[in-house]
Amino acid sequence: MNCRFHDENVHHECTEPQAEWVRDKDKPNFCGYFDPSEESKVKSEDKRVIVKGLANLFGDKDMAESMDEEVSTKQKLEELFKK
Image (cartoon, rainbow, N blue to C red; front, top):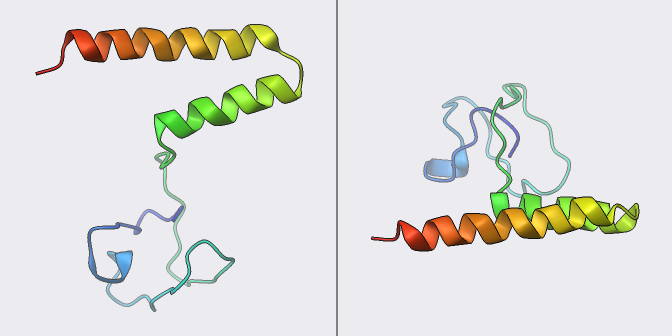
């Protein structure tokens, strides 16, 4: 899933036509055509949960609170510009 050829919208979720099908992409696997993706495929909501969890784990309450404020601001903007 970290490969630049990974695409959930195509056959076998891979745009490289010669690559073999990887059945379970969550487990370790090998592909000779693997090329690391430059873009992050982690959703922004997941990033917030991850960062907040790390902030809580390491006792950085300021960072955890800033993540809550960031989400609140983002939600307000989305509500404001909803179609």
